[in-house]
Image (cartoon, rainbow over all chains, first blue to last red; front, side, top):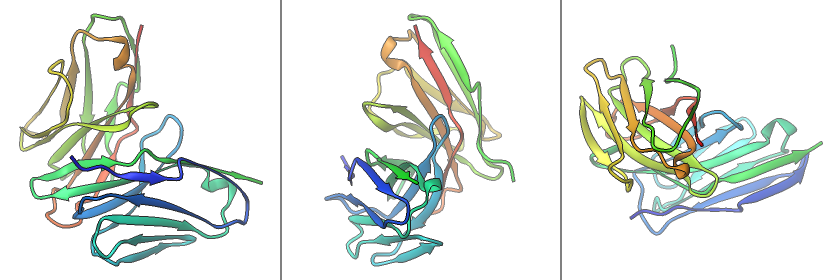
Length: 113
Length: 114
């Protein structure tokens, strides 16, 4: 059974601060996806990382996949109130499990003005 | 391009009843998977369908079932509802790529069991 440990569980910061969310596992994943979810809505895909050591940037968000493909991080620079939400990491094992994701418990981010 | 569409969005059922939820994947996507989201357990995988066949199954009781039609649309059914089945049920679809398979979610169906 693959498990993803996501930390921190809660994050409360002021606008303009930087933050990092971590996602760790003892299992290897073929890919890892990050989602953001608003209350009452489905998760919205932010990025998919596939290659070990891969770094992807999406405006102020930087995503990194660990060299061994067991961990990932999401870094937000100069957070804005609009970044508030639930951030989820999810790993895919691959093989015949293309549509099966293992999710972390999520990080609830609150950015105060 | 239309996203993943789920119906109904909200529903209230009584303990012991059954419920059917529907999902239309993104056009061209043949893999459809279902997830249950609760505050205590987070997002948990229910099952995945590809080409009308269940390919993977999560650790849920047999009361949870699903199917996929030839047009890739999918339904999930929960029989003999229990209070603990109250949750957001999410459907997701993907292209079924070997590498970097990106999975897109619908807005979910909120089920409340009373």
